[in-house]
Length: 146
Image (cartoon, rainbow, N blue to C red; front, side):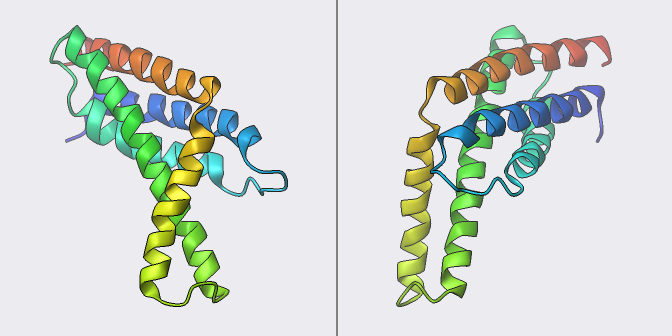
C-alpha cells in the first residue's frame, strides 16, 4: 500500500543511488563507458527505498538509522550483482567462457572486482551518510503523514 514514507524513501534513495554512482564512476578503469550506471543505480534506489526503508518507517529513531543504512548496503550489493551479471552476459555473447559454470563463477569474480573499486572514502561516505539521513527523514515523514 502506498504511503508518504514509501514515496519519500523511494525518491530520496534514488538520489543517493544517483550521487553514489557519480562518485563511483571516476574509480572505474580508464575508458569504461558510463552507460546507464547512474540511472540503474537510481532505479535500484527507488526499489530498495520503497521496499525496505519506506516499509519499515514508524519504528523509532534508532531503528530508522539502522533501516537507512540497511537500505544503502542492500542497494550497493544489488547494484554490484546487476553490473557483474551484465558484464558476464556481454562476455558470454562474445564466447569468452568455455561453459556455463565458468560464466557463473565469472559473476562472482566481477562482483568482487567491482566491490574493490567501491572501497573508496567518497563512495562509502555517500552510502553511510545517505543511509543515515534517509532513514531519519523517512521516519520523520512516516510520523508526519501517518
